[in-house]
Length: 180
Length: 180
DNA sequence: CGCTGGATGTTGAACTGTCAACTATCCGCC
DNA sequence: GGCGGATAGTTGACAGTTCAACATCCAGCG
Image (cartoon, rainbow over all chains, first blue to last red; front, side, top):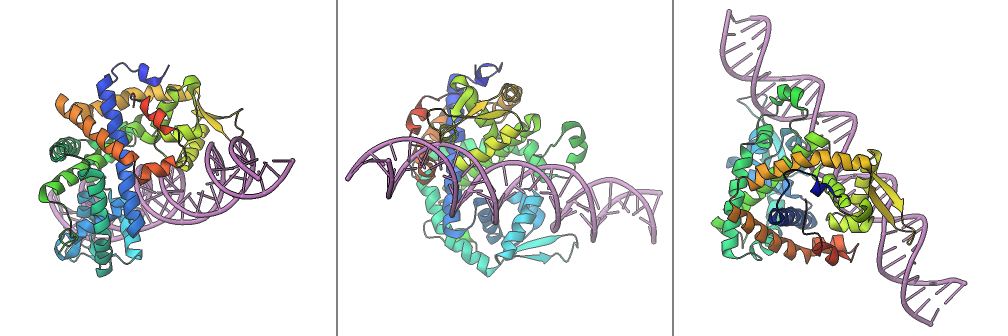
């Protein structure tokens, strides 16, 4: 007896095949992207995304909260990450004149340089492992499907957690650890 | 100037839209699945997969290396994970009589119970966040695309890393088309 | 003004995963 | 039979993440 036999509303055979393929592909893909990035720049994908997002912002700086929202991470995680990127000299913090609670994260020239040198290999890895192995139609379809999933999830509990970490306190009482 | 402008062979506009939708969807989806699982059973998805895989094996036990290959993790990670699952009383280690280097991981009754209680909510979360928001054709297409990506990645460096540790994976990969 | 609730951001502890050794065993071969 | 290399698995130090608690500040309201 396996646990896959006991659940009342388990997946159909085809659904299981799709599901299994999906999680395996995601796991291997993200591992490969991180491995490649780590190997030629010492960044993981989360840190890389932080730097990219900063590089696209006016003045190469963004408020911490907004940066967290853009990169889909919690403020706590971002705070730790920025601390490490700051140690490495790739990012610096600046205080916000209009709101003394606030802080900007800003890309340094060294950070931009690291990003530029990491970008080529990263793009090649993405091409090699995603775009080159799929047909143009499959790429389009994957984009569409991903957008549907993303938009559905944005309305769900995870996105709400990332967006409003504080208000989880009431819910946490009844609902135990809402923002895992 | 942002880094997305400087790379010689960056992605086309449509590719970038697809790419960003994909990574955001993956990030939100895996976060949601982990959150749900953690919330109602204290397991993350990796640990859940270990228990599921054990539950499907003869005698509810598998050699460590084979388990690592089946769950697409490194032996080191699996070793740590099994240590934690063992502390919790959900898995136990057994020595292998035919190879004194070897070890089995075996599911305990308590582990099976945890798995059974976690399965319902997990399946519902997968349905809610994946199958319910996509059309039947999209599910099929996502399955096909995922299989292509997975198979391409299996030949790549990451899979070789995982596999350098275990050669007998081809057979394993074929007979398990089922079950989360 | 001063109080209160909400928002911003940081911190430290505990947990999880990674990487590079390390031990122990097995196997092939002379 | 024993040497050398491969294989199985574990370990410890370290990096990254989560969670709850915290300090600080803003904004509305009496």
